[in-house]
Amino acid sequence: MFAEATVAGRKSHVSPASAMAAFDLGQPEAYRAWREHKLARYPSAATELIVEVQNLMAPTAAEHAALLDCLSRANMVIYRTDPERTARDAVRAFGEHFGLRRLDNHLCAEEDGISELRVNEGGPQAEYIPYTDRPINWHTDGYYNPPERRIAAMLLHCISDAADGGENALIDHELLYIRLRDENPDFIAALMHPQAMTIPPNVENGVELRPCQTGPVFSVDSGSGRLHMRYTARARNIEWRDDPMTRAAVTRIGELLAGDAGIFHYRLRPGEGLLCNNVLHNRTGFRDAAGHNRLILRARYFDRVAHT
Ligand SMILES: [Fe+2]
Image (cartoon, rainbow, N blue to C red):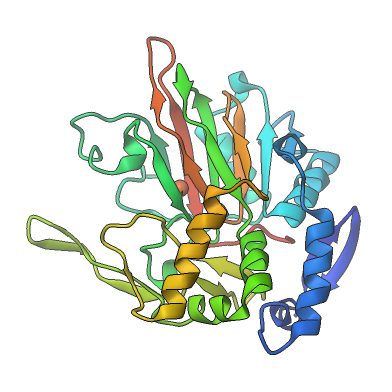
């Protein structure tokens, strides 16, 4: 069984086992080869992430190839399409073109599994930060999910933007992995520990909505052999494994995310969207005004983008 990857317009075949070797601390040669390839192709500016798409329902072969090429370089792409022609069914169909079918129907999602992120004062979702205009710290989506509901990919589609603010910062988690491993492979060992990070249960009015979740920060998906990251920079209500190397690694992640190496900043405009393999991201606060009420459609998938 071989996964297929598009590399610079040509097809190459990488088995999950050989993809996985790059993330094995016992195989430094495999890591070096993968690292060199990754760094050589990583985009140097957010503008390199943008791909125009005429119709989300039916991307052309050339558009599809350009989107996949960008995804294979950075685990993310920003598509740009006509805002007048976009509805939630188009967003859903677009995901399906990339093998994204298993949507996470979580607490706040609509019936079709797509969430509408907007300021929702006083509503049932008001206490969840994505539904406010407040800044959101660095994280990957679904870091509180159990392993069987791991979010491998996600899509954010902008229907309307705020009067100001609402910019995302983005970094491929594979790039962060490289920075950490180059500095100290022990950081990686600590972050791959099955007890590295614990998220306490979500309890509302004495009812447990979600149990406690303990797991690694970095893990390798056995199906694709690719790296997954589970992370939140929030300081409250996170229990890190009580060991010096874990603490040092978490501190270093915070420092790297506060820098600018490999980090893109982009403010989605109407008709634009981010499609990614759940890369690390944050969001600045924003201000709505009449005619400028920020509305983002969000889809979270258990599938990883196919062929990336
Ligand atoms: Fe998010």
